[in-house]
Length: 117
Length: 112
Image (cartoon, rainbow over all chains, first blue to last red; front, side, top):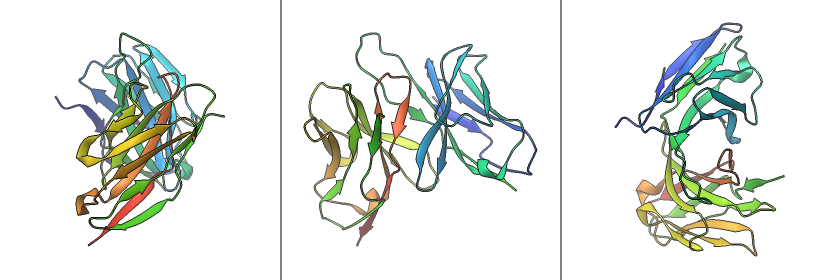
């Protein structure tokens, strides 16, 4: 199993350009997440999805959109990139345990380093 | 607000010394707590998790953490540091299973 993969690994954009980050998981996980990691701020949740066709806002959703058309894929879009979106982006997924309450760890991808000039 | 705080953004220990990384949470409901490790230019990997089964949790690579409700803490320890332990460590909490809240991270340096 490849686990969680992210495409691309690196990207440089100019202000105002758009792009889509792709996250794919082959573990049949229901939940998927997008985070950004900035120095001194840890990981902050951008958007998440609890199943195919559903998405929800996290802590810092402004300037981003997401889609979950297939269970295994979770796309993060930047419509008009800004320098403040320079960051490392991580995708994660987790499974749902049948018996509650017991929450399961997230599995992370290797990250995408995005620079907006 | 429900959150997690990691005290000390940088910790240095000598090889063979005790490692202690601190994590405190604030919550009005029972939390589920996690410690992750991040090596340079990599994603996060799970070290251990607390899900109410036992207050002392053992993880990978000799790490363990103890959940103390009275202190709202979940500190990470390892009796003897190894050079390979040098990394960034994150404490995380979830209350619903939908959203996870991460601390700001602690960078561990191991001095030979």
